[in-house]
Amino acid sequence: MIAEGDPSHLEETVQDVEPEAGSSNQSEDSGLLDLIIRFLESAGNVLLIQGPPGTGKTTLALEILRRIEGPRIGNRKLPPNRLYISSRVSPHRLRKHFPWINEVVDPMSGKTTRTSLAEGIEDFKVSQADSLLSKILAMKQSRQRSIIVVDSWEGALRNTTDEGRRMLESAVLSEPDESRVGVVLVSEGGRINELAHLVDGVISLSLTELNGRRIRTLSVNKLRGLMVPSSQGLFTLDKGRFTLLSNTEIVDNTATRAKIPEPIPHSETMFSTGSPDLDRMLKGGVRKGSSLLLDLDSTVSVLETRLLLRIIISNFVNQGGASMIVPSSTISSQNVADALGRCVGEKALEERVRIVEFNKMLPPRKWRLLVKSSLEQDAELFAECWKEMSRISSSIVLASDFDKIAQIYGEDLFLPGLADLGATIRDSGALNIGIASRPTKLREDFLRTADYHVKMENINGSLTLYGVKPFTNVYGATFTFPRGFPALGLTQIV
Image 1 (tube, rainbow, N blue to C red):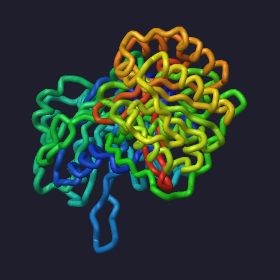
Image 2 (cartoon, helix red, strand yellow):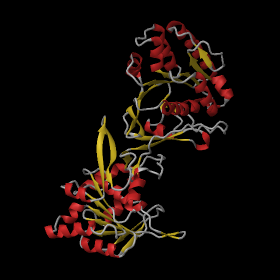
Image 3 (cartoon, rainbow, N blue to C red):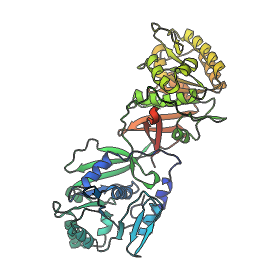
Image 4 (cartoon, rainbow, N blue to C red):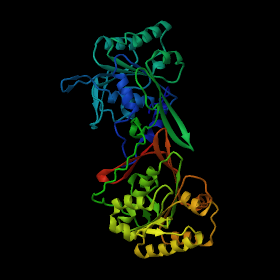
């Protein structure tokens, strides 16, 4: 992003915008962004973008320019006039730090520079802030659908008199009903209270921290004439683009009958999670013989947790591995088996999956491990089942809901055999996943020796994941269902 006031900060801010290879893209249907575009396509609306330095105001302004559409004549869509007026950054530096821009006309040289990117802005003119008044008036008098970005408003007024300021404000704010020009004013964070009351819309960008990790938030202060269903959203500047993270609206669309996809293979030393993005976040997957704590915030739904576990477990089973599962208290073993069976097939489910069930009244099934709700007896049953799975496959994943275990056996679990069982699981080279949403003793004991610690929570309506061990940035998470099977995509907040 382009730093406010100090061009030297520009390179320092955009250098971490390089995307990780293969990272998932969010949908163009971005909710709040669509609302902002619709607002600016209304006659004469003026939008103020405000926020501290480095929050992404310039990047948002450029994204608005990219997405704004012109009028239609029959089936033909005419391009709108787009003008970016900068008081801070030259056209050359703009092209350098936002290489996705397809075409920029430099009025100083008269030359047009194109890149090879097909996804860009055509007829996008960049101008310095000199003669700002005449540029605004000329576009308003043209009566054509136009969009003007002034970046920044304080910079444009820096060398003007009080009379000049009043003339500029009048040019921007006058005749809103007759004008077909949308105006975006970028504020460097100066004294803008009066201007905020005069414009039609105000957007605020903020940059905060979550346990030392970067969180970027867009807030809608007002969009006159429009109903705003949700006033906040997380965004990222990944790839030098302004992208709002999608809201969490998940429906389990796992197909009843579909061809089972090819699994993502494990390496000699690492297990794949079944998600290339999650593997990259964890620096290549998870080591064989390791343990992972999946820490859930109270905002995370059961469905979101189940989809993530289904991706991990099915990737094991679909390449000959085995799995043992202790499901949460709100999900029956039958429900888990039905959902997982659609991803691995009925034969693999019966041969290489065991799902713990505490309801002794249910009939036996090959995949169902009926236990007695007695810690000592069930530990023995579990150990026998583990030996059986070890004979079937050398690649095993154990997924245990610690809240369910604490509910059945009590908060203060103590049995010497449990420590021996944990050592056996690690020595066998298996992956041991613990799932917890509250601070039980079992969670705390597991956390002390866990090799990986991943937190999962919803922030401003977006599902996020981030690593505590290893330390990672915050990632927006989306679940999709290509060919009827769940897939996890992650977008890093940078």
